[in-house]
Image (cartoon, rainbow, N blue to C red):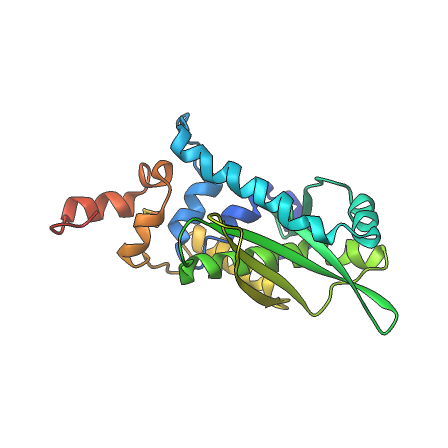
Length: 231
Ligand code: SF4
């Protein structure tokens, strides 16, 4: 696509947290990115895990409050939303946390994606989405980190903590995806109907937020077909 054509296209803004759902359910990603939801009332049950998650995020980041980390976070802009453009898509997101390490007298940044769970384990598809999320942040922030003299280390870290006792359940290294811009273009082609997309395994729908299920045509079709005992 020529640069002039690209510039004339309307811009779309994609949130990292919704875009990263694509690998396990393209429909969920599309709904979260484009759908105007009816006002959704969170009940206390829905709010609590989020509040616990935020509190744990803060606690887990405490041992990492060293000078370099605080300095770099301030340079980057605390609570800043990063954004980067591919064709007419602007991807935006706010990373969870970072750590600074020193190797051979040179400082590097390890980006962290922190997830908490009230379960004993976290499903594979949730891990995949979190890995993609971190890869997107790595891509979004790469140039800024280089500019401030703290380039990305070869991997970031996905950390999964228990909401019950704060135990670290898993720590997964996540590597930079050199093809991530092509992946974003591929996602857009799928959304436009130029590439085929497939519904996820029906078990995954159980984990989908109610507000997404309420507008999901795939879910409604499955419910109509209605297998006994299904959801
Ligand atoms: S209900 Fe199922 S098919 Fe629909 S968006 Fe959610 S996970 Fe995807």
